[in-house]
Length: 425
Image (cartoon, rainbow, N blue to C red; front, side, top):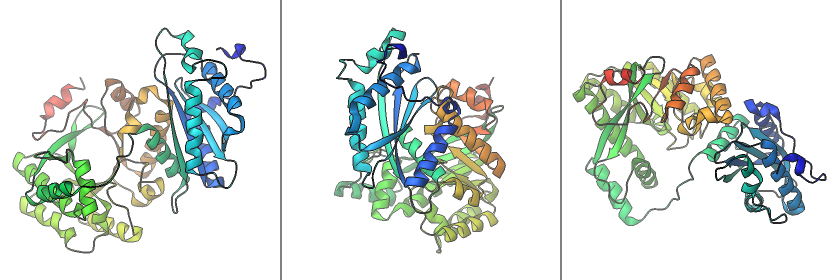
């Protein structure tokens, strides 16, 4: 339904044109979170097709009018990002507004958009007249409250990561799984694989990220699940050391060139015991220079003591190692900690890279992060590159390095350097 055909009594929510670079939405979100300590974002994504944004906003306006006082929160703004993404910002209308009530509001909005029952109109029918393809809407939501010591910038990145990323896996562990974890660690059933990191300007090899695969999958199919289960058992450190040893031994035996990125948890940098000497002793034994090693911080554990953590980072730097931050913008890796840590590398995760050429929201996030990293001297790595269009856009931004299935999949035998450069010709 074009805007001109909407009932005169329906006021279409204001579309902020500045949302094309996401500045207005980000600023409004931050101010809202700082003022109220909580906020909700509802994201509406059109699956495909071109359409008039006024049409969808007209549908949203009609929906909000029909819901009336049924919403527990108050809609503070309706924003557009490109031609496919829309965001509603919900703020508390009273002191009791919490995640439960936000989920109730989200459910009402999802149901209402699926069927504007008062008018007998399906949301897809409102906009399908501009496209001869089937059109569908995806509606997601995230509710955030401020965390102690967390900046509003980091809360914003957490929100968009949750909106763009996969759902959280449920926890819990059966006895058989515990036996499986103990067997994998005890018998060393880990196979290292290596994925190259290349310079995006010309495809030159920069190094490899050492990853791990379970040699004999069974009850536990992948290493993410394995580390989660090992953490529940208090064995995450032992598993991490096993993976590191296996990876470094193969680096030496296969004569793998360039920088070697090793995934480590923040717990390593907070340890006061012998763990700190394990990697150094192994490197010395294998005759691998410490300057080749980059510790890539993962989010498997929470940083309990930032001062101790930063002292641990300084200790490893003094030994000649480099530091990389993984998944910038989520978990502990907030901009405030990034500024204090001053890593040599920063990795942008897949949730930011996926379909970036089609998403002004992702583009704005990545461009702001790249600008921040350039000012701090950190080199940016875009991970999870899977499509030529993503690669082309990332190269246009001047991002230093990249990795992903488009360039090369993880493999026990590293891809020859010549094969990598051929993909940039």
